[in-house]
Image 1 (spheres, rainbow, N blue to C red):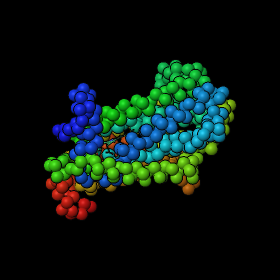
Image 2 (tube, helix red, strand yellow):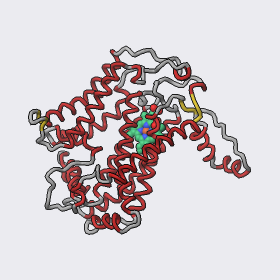
Image 3 (cartoon, rainbow, N blue to C red):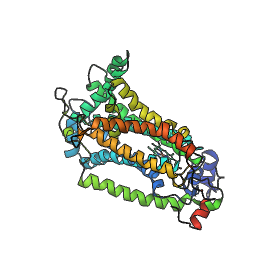
Image 4 (cartoon, rainbow, N blue to C red):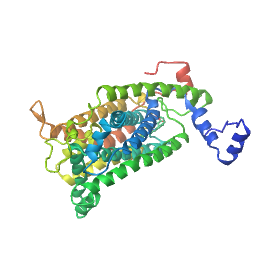
Length: 415
Ligand code: HEM
């Protein structure tokens, strides 16, 4: 940690500083914080994610002033928001598309971490808190999707909660306990609403820890080498405040393009039909950001093992800092790892594609997608548990620059 350079300028700020030095904290973490001078566009996504969280909180709080968490009124209350509440349509579309944009940003943020080895020592805790955030985000999005009480809301809630019934002996009681009854019904909707309101605040608290943990070692950077001298860094403000703001505006423009021109593009038309326990939709699909996990779940023939694989896929991420045995952080200097990184990206997209198709679909009528899904699932686990540890041992990394300043200022083209 760098020493504080905050100097209180008025009597009041001196008084405050001796009692609750929040201004000092803000000054040291957001203005003067020494930040590597080579951070690129991919490092702006942490700030973008914080923005997404704030947008979801603000729009969510206002939406909940008009929403009714009762199965008799929930669907209509959403239509009331869309038609009668001033700018209700805007709030709802920002919130719904905001969730998608939040996930888009988090996937970019996570793959950035995987590419530059940001999870490696001394940043393991930042990474693990990140995984916790990701799981909390998924839980929050799942709970929120139930609230409009459309057909997909109802059936997604039924399918996902029923997964727990695969647990031997206690599965059935657990599912009934989650539902608050013997099917997804009013008690389920009410508790889902309560938890959907609660979890974003838990996320906000974990984000606080995530950023705190980041400020102890400071940012990693695209070269993956440590900061060695003040020449390697720049003060966070104005350099990164301006850069973050620029990309935030670009991101917001893309988000608003969805909100204004294609607000239902990422949604499912069935959710404009009220949830009906007597009519099962022919093809129940989750939102796009869950599709890779949905594919993993469905590719395992046994329900219990499918659920274990699903949760195993998320839990795997926790171990990444120790599964990667390489001494070099950044993929820029890891020619072999870099290839496997891109194969993993392709694998994730393939899993997403498989998850979106009906179970009995096939590629060109020849290769059943079930097998493609199984192969892609195998590859996902193999990447982390087999390939990552092995290439770290056998790969010969390219020479790493002596310092950030040298690499950036006496610009030898970096790749
Ligand atoms: C609500 C979600 C999240 C928020 C608001 C958030 C916020 C941030 C911020 C502000 C930074 C510093 C700026 C940057 O490096 O982009 C950061 C860094 C980082 N985050 Fe997140 N994050 C979130 C989720 C995640 C997830 C899901 C992971 C991984 C599983 C993760 C892993 C990391 C890592 C490893 C760093 C350090 C990067 C480096 O210094 O190279 N974060 N995060």
